[in-house]
Image 1 (cartoon, one colour):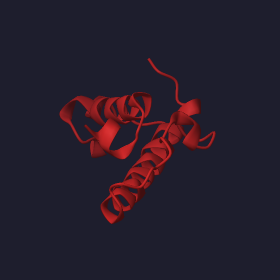
Image 2 (cartoon, helix red, strand yellow):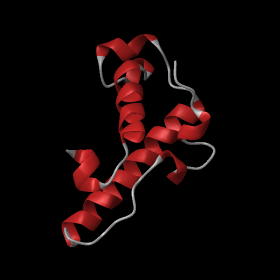
Image 3 (cartoon, helix red, strand yellow):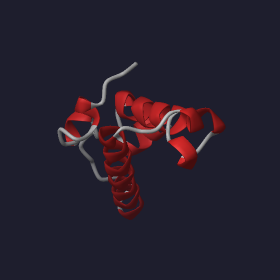
Length: 87
């Protein structure tokens, strides 16, 4: 639903989901993540991704019919998803 409604590609959503579910150290969102800290690049990706998604949610709320460009991995700097390797 989020992918279509907000124009976010699945690779972005999948990476966000994976990092927020399986990592984070003592500040982890889920118990599974307590065992593994986020790297600086992963933490930066999560912060950047959440900011972009919040902005997109506001844009869609303001004008649900407006065409928005897709949010892809390319939307993030080298500190973002391109530099975070998948397991």
